Amino acid sequence: MTPLTPTELAQGWKAWAEAKWQHELLDLACNKLGWTYFHPYRSYKSPTGFPDLVLCKRRVIFAELKTYAKASKPTASQIEWLDRLRDAGAEVYLWRPQHFEEIARILTDRSPSGPTGDLETRWT
Image 1 (tube, rainbow, N blue to C red):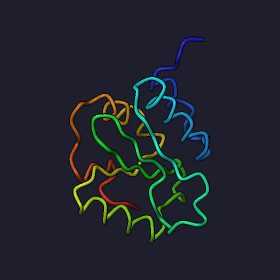
Image 2 (image 1 turned 90 degrees about the horizontal axis):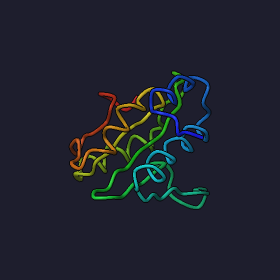
Image 3 (image 1 turned 180 degrees about the vertical axis):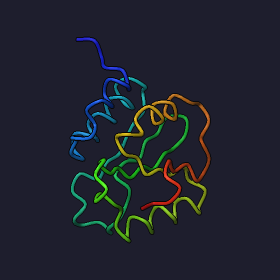
């Protein structure tokens, strides 16, 4: 089967649950672009709010994933983590499926978008 392009993948993103969204993103990042990732599988024993993914290749990216739904917003503890990481100089994003093509560009780039690399101007 031929891999789907980012545009083809994005066509169905409105219905993606967060698990499906994460699966598609990791397929792109790890299987197609060679990134390594960390995802806290069961975070119930960890402090709340840590981003969903840490991606590493030639740089480190912290990404919080949210679905397309407007109700899918980061919690206060997630916002605190995103702000603290960004303030420490980390490359930090809040990613949604509708950002897929821009995410593909970011992951293909060799240089970071900057320490405040969020695609949304605010975390909400």
